[in-house]
Image (cartoon, rainbow, N blue to C red):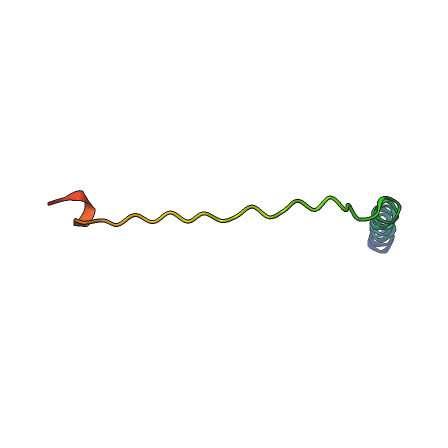
Length: 54
């Protein structure tokens, strides 16, 4: 089996996999269940001394 045949087989398999994924995606469609984004809570601490040393 030559290099050209191997590359052609790989290309055909790749197209088949992506085509199947595209078909499934089109069949299922987008999911309308968008959850609300979680709020970002930032916590800051104030150090009165450097590294906890007095």
